[in-house]
Length: 165
Image (cartoon, rainbow, N blue to C red):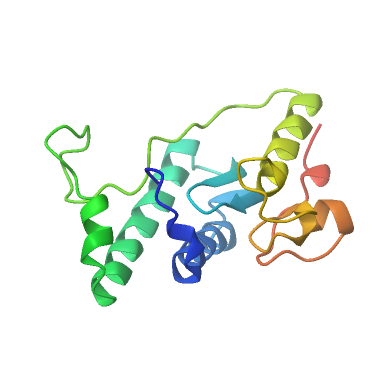
């Protein structure tokens, strides 16, 4: 998100949530965990069927990017739009605005690595840089409450414990 705290505004966080819900409901992926931080998003997914990670992330970025643009134009957020404007120095010359950095998709091959990644994701709102909550399970835009307290998160997820090894 280029360091812009876009997701402090619930309208933009909801766009991300809606995209994740859609991709999960339409069987593009399993969604094991997620967190929407003020200026970035972490998700732990498993593509399904004929879809690979690139297809899923491409659909996610395309939907959210178009929705962000519509929302910013609707709200007359010219200054915000300018921050996402594609420059001549940008890698992506096929669009006027660029909202997402390149995906950092990684394969996970061990149970230990899986839990380490999920711990990292879920602990983000409690780290020194952010300190958004004292208990990570209290953070609204996270699946930590599911794994820590067995509570339903803001959107439905797939329990990773049912799918691993």
